[in-house]
Length: 115
Image 1 (tube, rainbow, N blue to C red):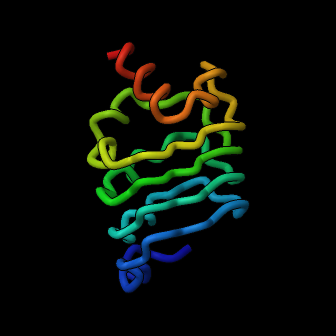
Image 2: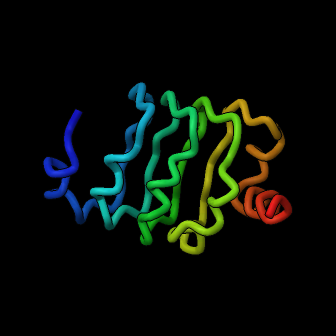
């Protein structure tokens, strides 16, 4: 598994597709500070990776077909919460099933109700 230091040379990377790679942790993504799009569909992610929302340039995050059952309520206060335009959650066994089909707007509305 590469370390943050090994990945730091790729800091200008703007798109990253790691779909279908059996990943369960995205903490190394924070080394890619210019990322605008992350596709990690079809992996083994069980918890929403809040650390990627520290990437202020992030516009698109595809987390579909993973193992997430819930979303963190502090998702809305993350640095990239305002810049994020597309959040794909379909195919996750969310405890609120219809949430996966409602897109980013539906997720934000739902989380605002919980606060």
